[in-house]
Image 1 (cartoon, rainbow, N blue to C red):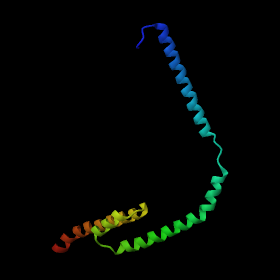
Image 2 (cartoon, one colour):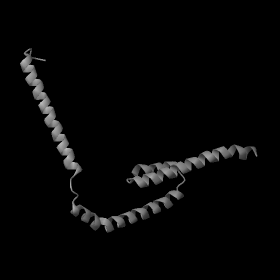
Image 3 (cartoon, rainbow, N blue to C red):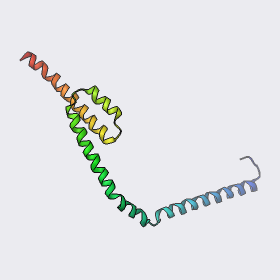
Image 4 (cartoon, helix red, strand yellow):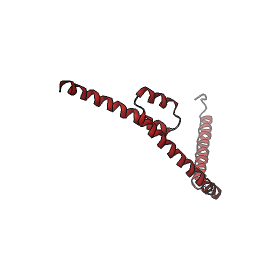
Length: 121
């Protein structure tokens, strides 16, 4: 747009088209190389070697979650559960604590709904 010479404009447009074509070809080559990249056998071997260790860690985590679940059953204060939730690091721990909080709140609501019946009865 800066030049008024039509021949120069044609050369610029042609150069732009060529650059766009080259960029498209590079993108296609990159995509093809990713798509058809051979899998590395050594990576699979690493996974097999780490499998017993990861399974052991998973079992330890399950045991820790079971212990946490038993601990949560004894807690009857939502504020205490909320404090535990704030310091919990693992997703599964937070999930268990949130479930315990929901259970306590549901019990509180149920208790409030029953209390007028008990007063009037």
